[in-house]
Length: 212
Figure 1 (tube, rainbow, N blue to C red):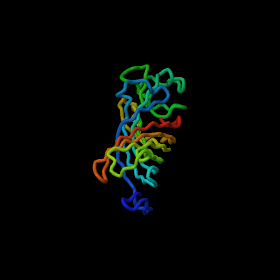
Figure 2 (cartoon, helix red, strand yellow):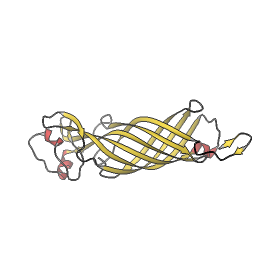
Figure 3 (spheres, rainbow, N blue to C red):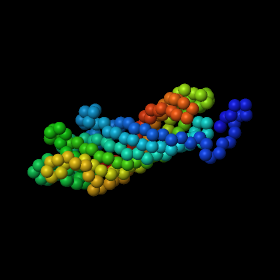
Figure 4 (cartoon, rainbow, N blue to C red):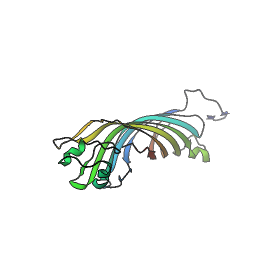
């Protein structure tokens, strides 16, 4: 790090660590998942990350989180994957689909559109680059912009489903599928004090097809 009147000095491994806690919303766009309105398409997530700046502009971070995502599919497309069996919509929560993970049920009594909601845990590892320091370093910067790229892994844990009585309930997944992802993101920091920042984290992720 740079010390006034001395210059650049090597710091011990215990220096330059940071801890982030954040929560927000997500939108999942998979096969036919663009169906449905914006609000019902919105899921939520929270995560905690630990990172370290190795150099002035370059660092890394890793974290764990838990999230919920929502998806949609038309009944016509669903039936192409798994023929309709049974005599009531409530059985959609019990049907396995050969190429579709999870449970689906009618979207607001719309028999042409099915809805899915699932919960999962995930872990990320990111390489981070400080754009603000790359342009001009100032230890007292009020705002900082950081870009990052990384990989992650998700595992389904619980999922909402319609039981045989037609009631919606949350249960442990019968097939807790795992899927990897690659992602890019932008962090906007606002300095509140010497050791405290508020930040906005915007991320775009691409998942393996079996994610949902």
